[in-house]
Image (cartoon, rainbow, N blue to C red):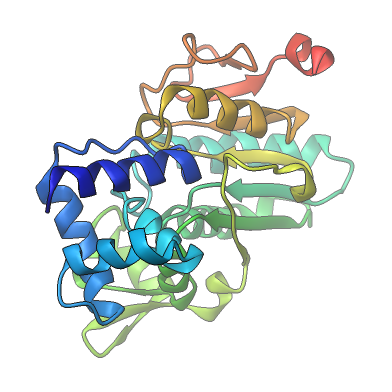
Length: 275
């Protein structure tokens, strides 16, 4: 893969989705783009990128950009945020919400492990929610990741990452060489393809947003935009979970950290009033 091709891909990723892609990491680009080239019938990555330069087709551009969005994910990643969500936040929201549905959004859901972890956590807390409904939403930029997520099919390696045996037995069944999540859990989630750097105002307000380990993959101006977009969608007493160790001081005052809960933030009332 030539350097100018790599730089073109990096530019497209930044312009369309705010993604930070290092054009010097040729191996990473080739490993992500080779399946796209094969899927679309090209003999090589170079042939595909030449066609992209020539035709500038939106479908092809987004196929390339989406290929660079795939990140690491697992069920109940880091565990502590999911325990806090289940044991502390859900009961608080159920008690203080005057019976209205609790709206929870996995904003960069990838192949679905995060939002399905949230669904399982909701099921485990169901008896203590006083009949309050929990609406789960999931979105991602990558259509193929969303397709995989909605299928509920995972490999042995994927279910071994973060799932206790009890949860595996309770919520999955063996399906050939894969594991299939139960329809009950799958049907708890509503899906949507969303570009987080675009206008999100039509999505409504949320009590809880999970957007973990996305910021480091974005260029700085877009990192700020995403955080501000998400902050304005939170209910006044809502929260957003970022990744463990993710910090915002250099990005925006839209959120403030919750003391004692690494990765947990609330909207800053002063920022909301100014906006």
